[in-house]
Length: 123
Image 1: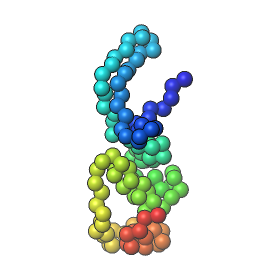
Image 2 (image 1 turned 60 degrees about the horizontal axis):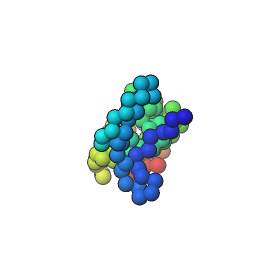
Image 3 (image 1 turned 30 degrees about the vertical axis):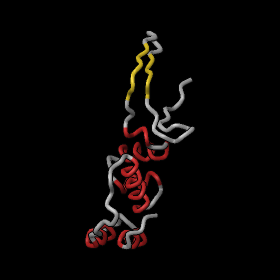
């Protein structure tokens, strides 16, 4: 039985290094120091979100529907993943109020979501 790959040491919580690869077919073993992908640092919930985000082709409205959460929640999850991957996210994003109102008029977001976006809140 194969176990999921872990990227953090269960003892000291530091990043683990892959040092051995093995082929179960021909039994070849390769030993060296291999780097993990940045995505290995994501937890299961974050990986699931990325899978849904890609399936929805980055359409946040579709991600909202799939997860049953609000726009600010989707943005918050996305910002959290971006941060976990080591990229910076703007602390205070300039809100385009006209764009928010247009989204509200088109029915893309609810009034409560529009208020949250304008207030810079994330749920």
